[in-house]
Picture 1 (spheres, rainbow, N blue to C red):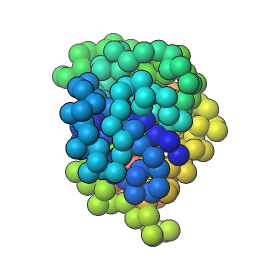
Picture 2: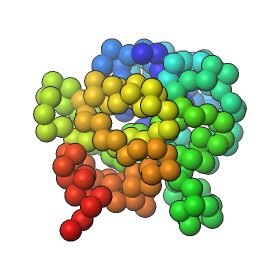
Picture 3: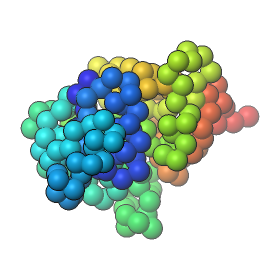
Length: 205
């Protein structure tokens, strides 16, 4: 797959490394100049690019603070699959009533911004300090589960395949409207466990 990574912080770096190791091509971009990103991109096995170049890939990953999404163009010209790896934190991102009151999930807000039905929530529940260590691409059973959710079934299949190829078990939460458990205030946030354990967290006795 050809993947555009928007953001070069911890999230962007770790995901880029995992995607490249799984055989994907990644263009990584950030707010600064392309030249300033060249060395990091080389280390990660990726290509440094502009936001526009990253946004032109088959899959675009949002690895930026939640409010930074507002600065990105919408809709994206190539209508890519958009992986929402962001987390909303009110202390950092300001208080957003419709999210705080659970009238909308964070990914529904993201999908509305991009005017896209191909937004898939994923890669936001496991801390980046441990994500690479927990990946088990050679182990087909007892993998750590990565929750994902989306409204476009084909986009979800692509993201589920990506989750699997980098070494995790895809854990389907349904559509964006039911992705609340994966949010920062949800029961699956920072739960680094297998799928059966995640199901227990969703349905505690």
